Image (tube, rainbow over the protein chains, first blue to last red):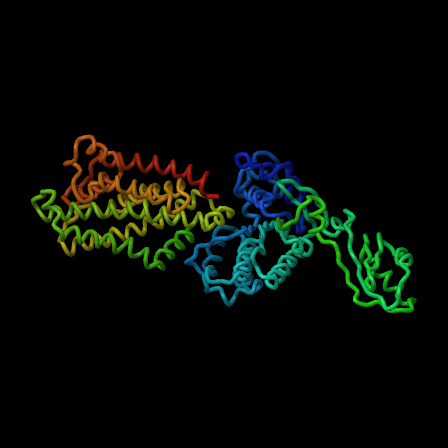
Length: 304
Length: 246
């Protein structure tokens, strides 16, 4: 039994079809990402899973329970980080922890949680006084207060600066060892690649592909580039022998190799260099990313 | 839920502006209206009688303000600031949220009423014949009715701009026909009957009874208050839980 199972989910707002038949399942302990541009239907999908919106059709099981009949039980097992979280502005973090602890039966000690998320020193501050990174740490800690088995995060790093974002990724990755199932949405492809075990690419309310990020990148035959310069002219046919190489070009001193298997090609290239009379330098690898996968699948970029 | 009630109270007592409007403003309105000598305008002979009339009116008026204005705007803030949404994804139900708000605002209304009563006793030497146990009950009924108005306004209006006409229209009608500053008996017949059916007049009349030595309030007034209480609470629960608390 998968903790999250979604089958053929549909939701329209008037004439706009926000979600057009989305299906996916998230395994226990897995970090699963919905990757897509703004307006792709990610937030609507999550809000249906959180019980905030009613779907037009489709089946949702969370921990084997039907979302319509067992919503309050489901809510006691699910922790949520909303896209933008509002909290009673006059209360301190300690008071908010205490308040939310009252909604659940089995909660973690606040001191322990605060220590884990580096919040001890700001417990007496108000939510509105925190920086973006502090807010996101607090909001995640609040979502984990009741030992949830599932955590749902909607664009958790939106608007954070890169260093803070990376720190947040570390925290999410640390959930992996604890058997917590994570479902998140993002429109940052690095985030999906680094954090997620599996990714579903969603566009205009439909999932166009889902798999492990590396598999998605490789399976679509998306090309990576290896570029370097050489002190001596290389015979291009020699380079074409290397595993994974699709095409080879030379532009004066710069060699431009297209490869389907960047790691393998690179290893072979470096091994070949040992017997080569000249020297190669300025070696660069441009790997394909989920961005390229997205572009190839949908014909438009993630940022549009 | 006890913690939620405590939190709402904490929020209230940390907000000096809210305290000013809820506690001091009604007192100021009462004092100003009492010293203006409005009784001459409406031809009430005895000054002491008018002070008692006014005091019970202002107590009811203050409860109305808390619901129709303060609560409506607070809930709009909670809704727009995604605060309600964060509560909605916890096991806390819409019903529990409404009850917690109602109880915390009831406690505030008790304080508000107590301040006005003390002022009346002390400055105007009014007598209050009410059974002390009946007072909280009446305050609860009155405060809850007007809080429901607030919940409903916030359910229909998305922002302050939309809420303002709702609040002021409802507020104006209720005050005009509420027997706050002048008795509604002098109004033309259809308006006087309408005043009897709206909640503010029965509430101020019920409170007023006890300033004039009555032991029991008017049963027709009580009945109308109960109908408003039950009917509005039911509608509020339906609308708020379906449309707003998510």
